[in-house]
Amino acid sequence: MKELIERLTQGNKLNATELGQLLKSAATDLSVLQLLRENAVRTACAQFGLGIYIRGLIELSSFCRCNCLYCGLRRSNRTAERYRLTPEEVLECCKEGYKLGFRTFVLQGGEDGTHSDEWLEMLICQMRSQYP
Image (tube, rainbow, N blue to C red):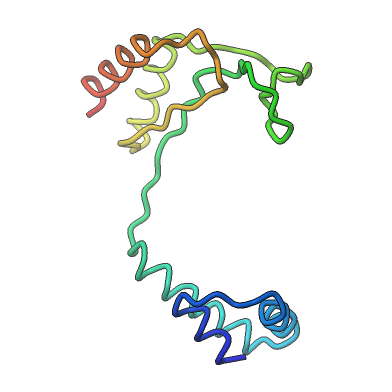
């Protein structure tokens, strides 16, 4: 198993049989599971470093014109609570988040056609000027 883990850690792909063997072994042998974990942590640290970035998430709208089956915001979901935040409500979220230590915010929402590029540009300019 060590050889498979080493190959995987070095970026080589395992075939389905090898991957199956490794997963079965990790499920029953704690030393294999521990070695996988150590290699995963080492790989993640090398790739991404040790920094953790926490961002405030602001959902602008729960309206969506799409009907993606995996998504709770899909247009055919009759039980979804629908809303659209106003710029003032978004800035209030930023104010609260800024007090809590957030310095970056992610704006997301459904595919809602009411938010134009100009609307978003105005909102982002206000956010950046009030909450640098």
